[in-house]
Amino acid sequence: MRPPAPVILVDWGTTNRRATLVGPGGAVLGRVSDGLGVRSVPAGGFDEAVAGLRTALGDHPMLLAGMIGSARGWREAPYLACPVALDDLADAIVWVEPGRTGIVPGACVAAERGGPDVMRGEEVQVLGAVAAGAIPPDALVCHPGTHTKWMRVAGGRLAWFRTRMTGELFALLREHSLLAARLTGEAEDDADFRRGVRRALDGGDLLGDLFQIRVREVLKLDLGSPASFASGLLIGSDVASGIAAGPEGVVHVLGQPSLGALYAAALAEAGRQTLVHRDEPAFLRGMQALADRVLT
Amino acid sequence: MRPPAPVILVDWGTTNRRATLVGPGGAVLGRVSDGLGVRSVPAGGFDEAVAGLRTALGDHPMLLAGMIGSARGWREAPYLACPVALDDLADAIVWVEPGRTGIVPGACVAAERGGPDVMRGEEVQVLGAVAAGAIPPDALVCHPGTHTKWMRVAGGRLAWFRTRMTGELFALLREHSLLAARLTGEAEDDADFRRGVRRALDGGDLLGDLFQIRVREVLKLDLGSPASFASGLLIGSDVASGIAAGPEGVVHVLGQPSLGALYAAALAEAGRQTLVHRDEPAFLRGMQALADRVLT
Image (cartoon, rainbow over all chains, first blue to last red; front, side, top):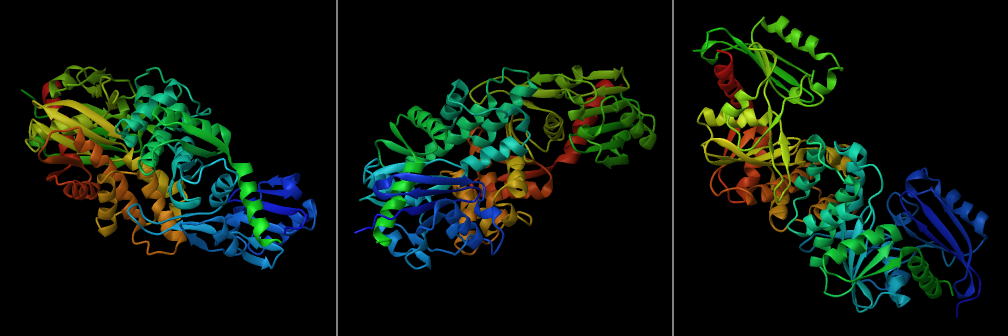
């Protein structure tokens, strides 16, 4: 049986980290969320960065997941080959201090037609959402972001996934391309977004369709919302490939709500029903399930 | 009849310009090539920049084409709607000094399924290559570059075209993306380039296939030549869409030789024969044909 002591559960990414103090029954007792991502911690600085979390949240056992386990993180944790279950992650935790401070491994897929792939952090979220009953044991899951992950869950395990640079490419276009001056403002689920999605679903010519923003500017045609249109092209392209790789039926979108809503809209254009799940509770549920297994 | 006086023919782009003094019979008598593209000339500075060419090459009649005729150039010349012939370009030259200094118009296509499109400069090249007999009067032409243009020539006229951001996207990935550190070196027609092209021709998942470079780095797999692979994915994607829009048969590639060779290799993977033509002589041939019509 798990003792009633609280645990600190940490989602430590490239540019941000979020530590949550969770008490008996899953009650959230405290939180630290800041920009001290893996990229911002100097070499040799992780012991101190971790100690800072305990100073803030108390001297409790701690599990960490995400890029903290990568080569540029604190200690390198392995990538477990799919299919992966929560039990597999629990068994392969890399202990910095046994029973007290552990890093959760990532997941990988072996080379097949689309090639190999890797993830860190999303595997905890999706298996947490399955453990919570929010996502069924057999499902297609989309986790949108800088690097969007499309995942197949089978028999309650993470069976396969594929990463696309959808969010990163959008950021590159907004910040550095010839289109940058026209891609201000947020992408929204408006008529231009849907038009971009339909273009992408209807054959797809991403390199040409993006240039249409420039053409319309030069010809002084109505631009509408170029940011929404470009987002629609990219998310539509992502969705077209994503649903081609998965089973029929409801697509589960797991992530941050506003981006999740854009993916849900694109999936609706593709004729698919969606359920959108927030990523943070899924992460906590997965990490608690791991804590229950290893911190008893 | 055209007098035997020489003419200055100028290809003035966004980042470069090239002026050629051409004598009777097409003999090249002199050249100025520098980085004084339209973007580098301050507002109001074009008269001086043009005078500098005459100082270098002599006080001769001058025709200019390219971005010099855009809104950010010297004088705005129109975009002529396709189909466009050399006679149409000649009739619509915008004269800064009548009979002495003229700006050649660009070309545009009206909105159809893929949307409208615009070009400045390539229309002179392709019609010049047709006038020279290098490209037949009915052909599919690919003009690779930062913004690659695919053109249909019909009855000796530029009938339609479509622009893709192929080169710009490659530059964005090389300079600003997570992959940048792996995309050093030049793209070459090697096994990795061909692998990228085949991936693109065989279904196409550009956003996912590009991320494979990152995956292989993380998993410490053999990277091969990532720049060639990424170039193959992009050019392959461009070619897949490009040949879908044009007639069967030989594809004419018009451009700078090393990039033209990559497109020819990608087209060969797609089962298409190609003929590669250099852009500079095609431009001069087209401009001479215009000079013959208007500077007599």
